[in-house]
Length: 92
Length: 141
Image (tube, rainbow over all chains, first blue to last red; front, side, top):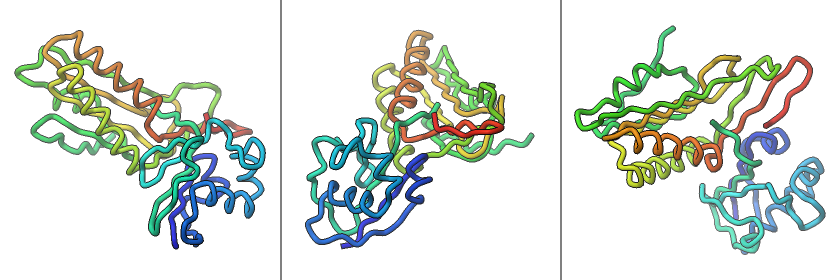
């Protein structure tokens, strides 16, 4: 299945603004992050405290809705989902 | 300087994430209502922390939706008569406008509280980021 990955601010500088990624059917949010980490060392170092453990400040959105990076990494993705990877917000 | 300000709807609502500058005066003029005795504004500007420029970036669609939710919540909590929020993105210089929030309400307490609520929610939740660009280094804040 094809999903869209978007990255912003410091993560955009590492991953690029937007890309499509082919994942196996049944892949989860955690699987997606593992794929990105295994193909991009800078992302791995920026986003993960240690293998499998995201840094606590990393924010994730699926289809523009926040998910809990600690509870919902097992959430299954679907064809066409838009996953956004964000550092802490700092507007205003 | 020319400003391009989209007109608020008949309900006085305006939410905009834009590369363009805005006029706070225009926003205040559009916020006024016969049933509103108070208009409170917040204007955020680029502070000189030894920077040359500031870059602002947004997850635009998500930020727009989130600002709409914050606006609706503020309207119902504080009985606001009109709310306008404009946040700029792109490359800004010291002194430039970043964000403006204009709240009209029947009385000042509601307008002050509503405006404060919106800026605090915006700063803590809305997906917008700032990068300080100095002479020798850049950093996301």
